[in-house]
Every structure is written in C-alpha cells, then in structure tokens.
Length: 65
Image (cartoon, rainbow, N blue to C red; front, side, top):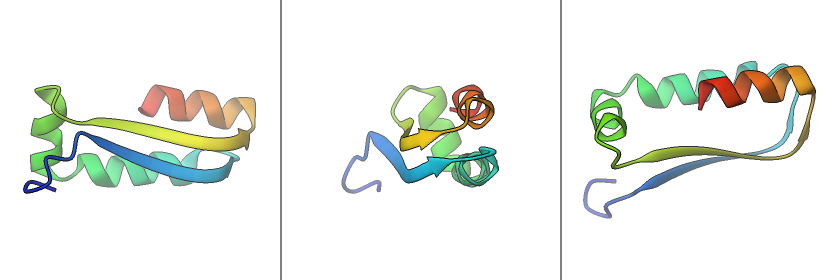
C-alpha cells in the first residue's frame, strides 16, 4: 500500500444487515497504526459499497466510516 500510494480502501458487500461485519472490518483497518495516521492526515479514505441494507445497519456503517 505504501509503494502504490493507495488513497482509498473500498469495502464491497452485497447486503448490510446489522452492520456489525462491516464495522468490524473498518475497525480492523483502523487498528493498524499506519492507516490511522494516514487517515488523520487525509491521505486515505474508507468507503463502503453495498447493494442494499437495513436502515439500522446502514446508519451504523455511516457512523463508522
């Protein structure tokens, strides 16, 4: 990721139910110190793409990203 200068991480899923799985995935990325630093400097963004989802799950994911 460093050598390619990645600017976006996109999580793609078909359906967001409770939002727990996507939230845990985003938290795992943020647990990496380098990615946390890049995010604070605005060097990387996290995006979630889903075909559909429940309102509760989508709200949870929106708050997490």
